[in-house]
Image (cartoon, rainbow, N blue to C red):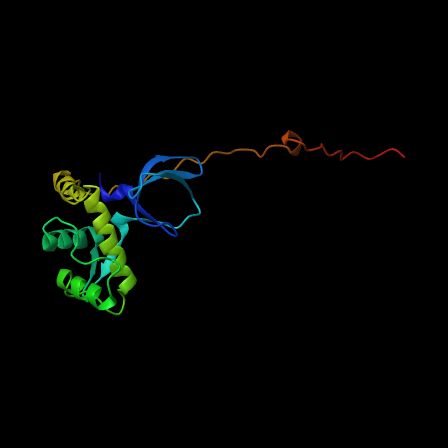
Length: 178
């Protein structure tokens, strides 16, 4: 399981795994209690593989941050809880990512990273961090072609008459007899 299938849903605690897609959104399963919920397209959803942390020089993908936490904690749960004090959280995160941008990474962000790491570790999903790396290195490199792209064919489609609409009436444009 890669981080592409793990989600954070705004307003919902914990992390979710995509189960299936529906017409209006998708079904997700909580990694905390295994309950399934339907999520519509209007919900604010973040895929873990798309999240990055600010540092003083660049943005570090969350996958790399999780790897550093795993190295520090030897693959176990973190020694710090996401409910600990702000100072304890910042001290822990400074040990993991020494050049993180303290102005743009808030204590609430650090809490989320620690909580998410612990959820992934409890569900044995940290191995996904290594699998993604193998998939990227095993993928063959494709050279870009400089051929001009062909324009898409344009279809001439006549609009439907208004009488064909359901519940519509036909317009009589002929002169009325009085």
